[in-house]
Length: 252
Image (tube, rainbow, N blue to C red; front, side, top):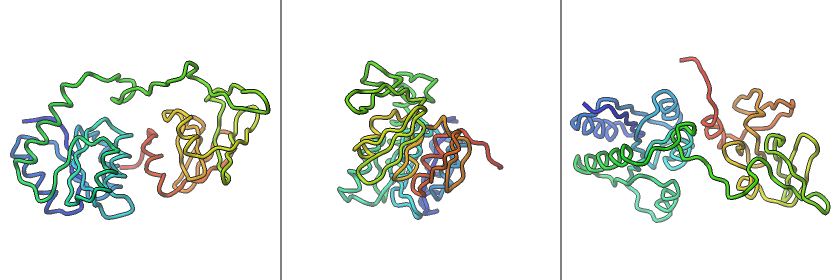
């Protein structure tokens, strides 16, 4: 009996049951199946799988690659994409999520056997990551000052602690950085701001908004209220990624 927990994300019941049957024959007993992105996120939150088989072409508003990116923020579990697509553009998108492997449909039991044994062996024998970071490698800053950013104001650079930045709002090709002491409006893109602000402290929640996670007071599917009483909208395509960053308790 093998104790590792494996999640299968597949909206074709015949394929998901086929993978499940192969895994059971290999001795794996902790197997979960999800047929949608929302169901997969709930399973990941509850059971924290050790490995994920992910169909790329999922039905719904997110495909398997987008879902894979969300799951990678939630758990340190290798993802194997299962796909019948060999489109170079899809493969290129998938590569950016650093998957543990690909299985092309139609597959056989030997394909699943080889993949699961190699992936889980690598997972078990790799150097241990720091537990405090949820199994993921800690983010290493290339800068000598790691608790603040220097923002140009007039003719000098002003030091602003990350904890003093409440949120960032874009307006055209300008952004306004709302902080404890003053607001800064500069010519910058939101992509640049995402790269400048540490991802363990800040998250983009809408195409025009980045928030400091520690400033969140409450939220729903449409908006976030900060401790400053400012209200920030949540974009539909950003909500699951945002939710994955937070430790939440919901009704069963």
